[in-house]
Image (cartoon, rainbow, N blue to C red; front, top):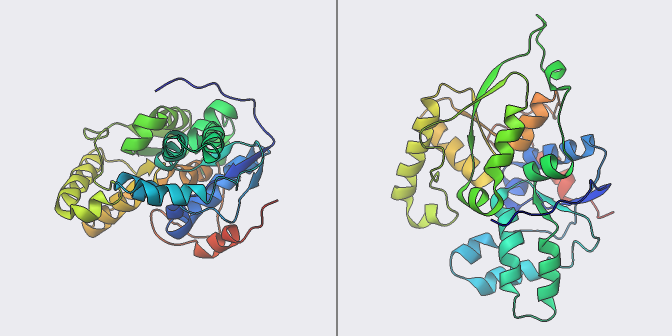
Length: 288
């Protein structure tokens, strides 16, 4: 992975929420916006955005993926960074959209220029905004005056780890939070078995993989499994609930916002479909 040059902190950004966040984990999108606004940024959400095209692309259907991507190339017209709360979707936009249009004289330059502005959320917080969260300890202080402890394990999707280097950013953010202890488990680097359409085409293999992942995480005795990718989060969370193991799963944005003392609309939303009312608010926001 080629090291990238990071821009100065901007005043305005786009949010590409991803289809999974929009449909299944809207609280993660809301909390991503809150984290960005906390740093003084104005967040723009183009209404026409949809899927990044990764399901079609990874299934060997580049034409369908190209059609999905083409419909969104002109949505992000201003030269603002595009922040994505998913490493795999960010990787699709940054690395594969240019390849989809490499022979297109019109769409190719647009895709390449857009790709340079794509950042995964954790990467953007750390490398562009250079967040430090010095007030996190005060935000999670108990009535006795001590910082409320929490142990977590981190899961990074395969694409996010390899294409965007997201694990490094996740580790750095979590390790800097007062009261949070990050534990490593035996199968941390392994795939959770989701893999987009892989889980549909090979359910038995996918099921065995996620069972291994959940068992490994639970063996650490952690309080929470944190991930920046909703597909993996839904897969792991569902497997844990089906086995009644009590493993809580949480998107990185929601975890950070909670540890910073943020409050949502009252829903817990650790890997479930709560918070849908707020998602509708984001989905109908006009582009400013």
